[in-house]
Image (tube, rainbow over all chains, first blue to last red; front, side, top):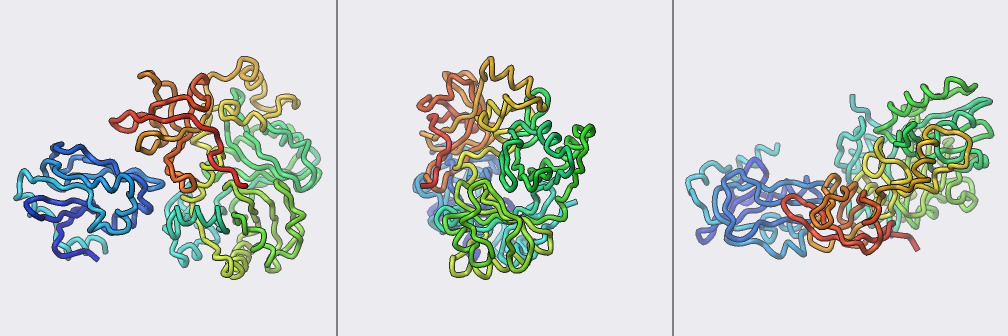
Length: 124
Length: 363
């Protein structure tokens, strides 16, 4: 359920480092807790954030939840498909439901994230 | 202290996501709010609404006591008939809004919001001392189910031993039985669909639920939580206390004029509401459809040309319309259909247009 090649945060987000970029999304657990996702508010391209900053919002029918930067960096891609199909976050949270990709400003921050085993333990 | 309803074990059994709501442990959803919502619009869904409060009024002056408390007119109710009413403070603000059942010539039942039941109970006690009436709080002993949707009658008839055709909209019946259990069945609900609400003592409600659940298999009966209850009432334009109604919102602002009988002899709040009616309201409830991408939520400011003209009272994604919709309280001049409004959603100002309420009407 929680792929080993991903890194995880306490805020139930995941990070996948690929081609020098870090893709960011919410975990299966997060989407399950949220329920039907009906809106994702994305940041603008080139916006820069510090680790822990709010970069967007994910809304289910009943709830509004902030998205937090798992790492510091600049937004280099946004998943525009989510504007019309936010439900993809429910359907494929660790894949097609990615939210943004960032260019990391401090790669050493990756060490602060959890691996799949550790994250799974936090859910128990 | 958080209470469990008599059906708590069933919520867990059916996979409900249980949350604390108004002092009760209740399911917010079972299979997803949108799925549950659509089941009620197209088939049939069942809700545990045992958290609702029930006050019974009995005695020679039951009618007089009820009439003093509520803004609508209970004198025009025949036995077994039901009305919806606001209950007001002297300044016209709303204590609560609820259904009143006339169970006998001198016997009435208020079915009040769970979140307000303690406050309501105090209010009722404080304001009925002069009447020869006995008022009992049956909230903890009474369970309630709502069976809602176009197939609700067909399903309920399988287990109900009286003819449901005879129970018209906003009428009830206490004579029929379900699985041998005494119950009060009324054609009422909070979804905008046809359907029934069923009241019984706590033990009885479990037996009744189990009978309906069993019979419901061939109807794909959907267990529904608080989430779908809210989206369904929202589309149907039904107010929710704490959103469209409250101590600082009067019923005329909330578009509930037809539930306020200003011709009636005195009731609490009448003088204030007469004054509002004469002068006209300064603001009122209106529906909006978002034109830009975003979901209006309670408390977000509403602006026109940079000036704040009101606030959002409720808002969500409408599963039936597949659009982001809202209910707002705005200055009267901006409440007309077609008015362009801006909703401040976090850092952004997003366009919306006033549309008619309700957003959804069953055919």
